[in-house]
Image (cartoon, rainbow, N blue to C red; front, side, top):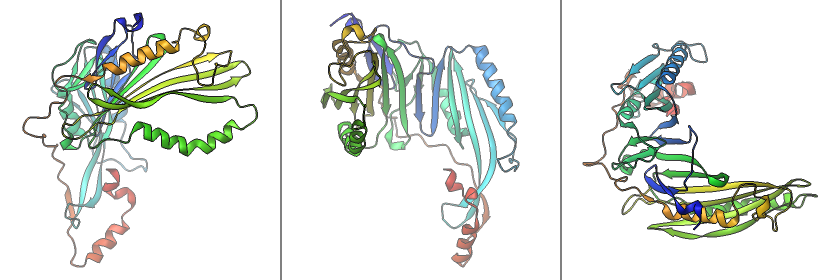
Length: 386
């Protein structure tokens, strides 16, 4: 153990705890999450004045949305709603779209809209991207959004993002998507990306996926390497199963070198550790960690894909340092206590859908209805918008 890993610091990432080297940083836009049909991005370092200016500027843009791309006026003006928690919700592009009711016979009109949300707390901005018919979902998300200190480890179920926390049980029974992405910059110019996602069944083996990709690209790679003057190749360091606590994951580390100019060689070294997740007996999300760095040297490495000599690392890690940091991070991955608690009493009910307006009932002759539906332009089929 060197100074690189002597003072590792614990970080809450999604529903996980991960130890990262002292001096680790991340950008203001480093973390995001997918929650159901909503995409939530966090930006840190935003003042309240900047937030209010952003809201006013966006409201002017939303107010100006009055017609669709064909020049047809929308059914009602754009709306600006302030939630009890202080969030701002914009809804716009209201239009009727015809389709079939649940009985597959009755023709109904459904009112569609776009919705997006913004929420500020203690210097952090939550931005909820535009989503179809998401007014109720965004309104329900606002009370779950909180700020937190960078080193704060919450004790309730939910997701950690940069300086923030989103309350939420881990409930695969409701079928909602959940995914977290967070990028970090480590000492020695190492980049780390952590991904975590809810799964209903284990995903494909990472090593199997890589082997399949290698087989598919083998012919192309061989042709490229056979071209005159091409100097390129790779080296495999690890490709094996790797157990971390109770998590039976897989590890893959490789390097690749390409000659860019007569005395310029570019070498990428990257590692991936993946756990496929599980649904039974106890649900657990999938986890993926990727760490990499890039070298540019004047000399070709001892072998293509190898780490450069120390004098050409230029502040980036040696092979020993790379694997010291990599192994320390991977071995630290664990579940945050209470993070995966299921909801008490079952899943909450989803927001009630808007009641559609009945346009017509099914005729005695099904052919009449079928002919009518066939004549509808594709843009009027509300199923296409889901």
